[in-house]
Length: 135
Image (cartoon, rainbow, N blue to C red; front, top):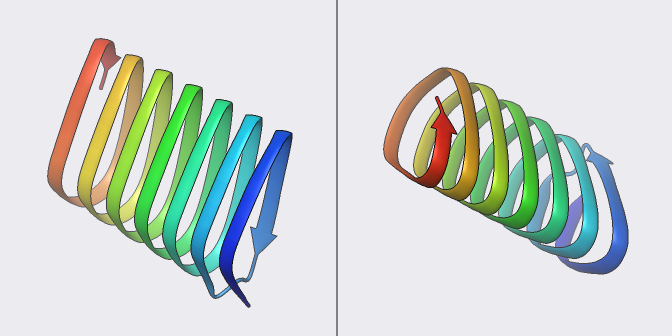
């Protein structure tokens, strides 16, 4: 029901969760991270540091703070009400989102950014720093 604080340090992390009410603090440090979640009400703080990150989430009410630092980030989200703060620092970022109502603060720093969004209602702050980007 509730994950208060979880620290994972490994070579490969496959993180599959569903039907959890809240994740307060989650820190993942690994070479490869596959992060698949569904039906979570609130993620307060999530930090992922890895070489490759596959991030698939669906049906999350609020992500308060998300920090991803990786060489390759594949970020696929759907049906999220609010992302308050999202920071991605990577060589390659593939960012695919759909049906998000509000992104308050988004910072992407990457060499290559593939940014594909649809049905996002409101952007507050969006910052890109990249050598090559496709929006």
